[in-house]
Length: 343
Image 1 (cartoon, one colour):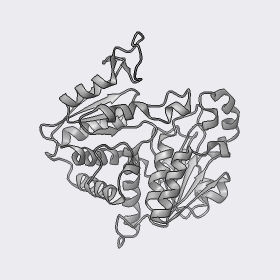
Image 2 (cartoon, one colour):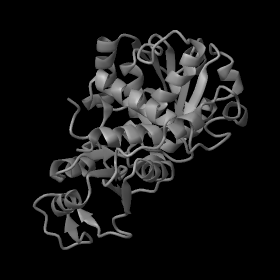
Image 3 (tube, one colour):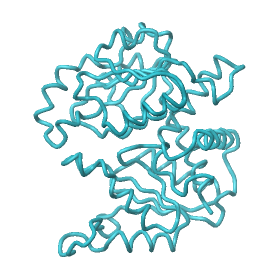
């Protein structure tokens, strides 16, 4: 039986994830349906979005449902998440009421809430998402917090499509096993959320790939929770996990290169101290020279991407880039998730 919510892929069995991916593939072949006819989803955005909002709204519409978009502090009241607090500040209502009221109106609730980038020990608790899941009487979907499970599924779906095209005799469940997968940090002028990196590490190891986490220094290794998830996934699914700080050796023989920028957790909330490290590692850009070291690797990124900062024009415009396919697949996997969770 599937979990009640879709908060992260680690909560789901491998067979449950495979079922979601198969359902998404079916929606890609036949986009329209009535699985959400007469149903609704409340999409709560604490942070901006383009792909996530568009794909969820259109996905609900294409399955006969209706999406309502809410932005607390803009077109909805500011919300308090702490318990036992005297609410004499900015917040007008408490999550205990918000989640339960939305659950009386809608059949699903989606939540997008980035870290506040002040204290990782607080942000890693994912309290906004967890509070919605605690109080909501209907299923809650993570639209990106400190993980991004919908992006994970879209990413894996794009990879499966690519390699099935090269290896037509393989099954979607097995085609990624044993592939060398490089999750590479890239430079960005400001520190970013670790959500996509956390999720990419989790799903790549879940699929039995040989995963290399490439980052400038040990300070950029991801939170122990996600490194532990990856180690557990390797033990259960096969493949391997290693950490590298050397781009040339990491890229050598790779089948997949996935790029993302993220901030170093030891400097969380103190980004000026981290800035000098970031500036010294601009050469981590994904470019033609590095891609030439691979085994004809496919390249992707979750988007948005700063060209010639994270990846060169030549890489982004090459036939090996499947970032647009991955972005399209957000629509299909979110239909799969919504239709699987709605009661």
